[in-house]
Length: 335
Image (cartoon, rainbow, N blue to C red; front, top):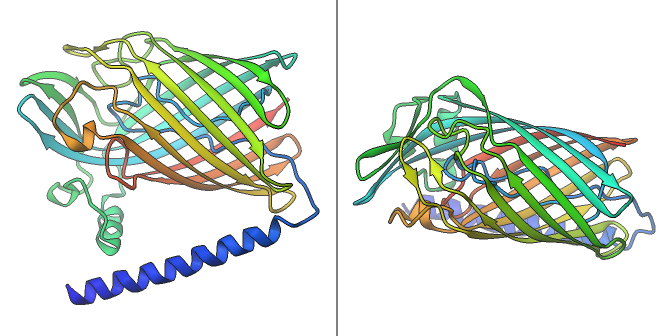
């Protein structure tokens, strides 16, 4: 144990030094006279299976655009907890392919549609993740007590089945329609966004929740310097009922997030963001389900003309309401 603590202490010291050097580097670059355009925060969202299909929000910019994007995300989750009422068993990897279209109508309103395709599967990364968590001392949700790469997606309330997912199938998720009203288009930019999610996914298998969900949010963006821009979102989600094998009443929840985009070079940008959201489920007395979910994302974006390619890594620092990790790759074309 003493050796482990020493290693952790040394790692912490090194990380602090690296972060300090990185901040110093960014501060130096902020005095640069070169200014590049900004494209918005990372296209990532929380892929926790129990909230993924409940109008799961994500960070986005306030200014309108006309664009088409394709995002591929892959997450791993391992969670086994029981309470007096609830039993939650999640051991899977989740692949989501999302198509997004946005249409800017004369800088007055932006209309959009999100079409997600989902696959739950046993995956292949359990061995790597176990080693990763053990090396850095991260909690593992009880992952080490399960067979490697063994699928499970089952949720019960009072012993009655609510959701039972199947491995290896691709299914359509709930389609989302969005409308963004620009209140101030400039620097800063401010918008209000409303969205409706339609029950197109199979709720019994976990692809949807079987009800119409709605949400409203405020979006802000502001340049901090010629090469730094920040994004802030605050919103509320009004979910319908979860209509799986049994009906579960869901609750309204709040969310918020902040991100920063650094245009350090002409064609490449570094991005970081934090996102926080409440749980839509009624109280389960399972802390890793009931607690507020926090996700941290780091990534980069390469741009060429009107097209861009971005990649990111997302981690759950408080091991609640989010996958162990998410890898994302997105392509966007602007018109």
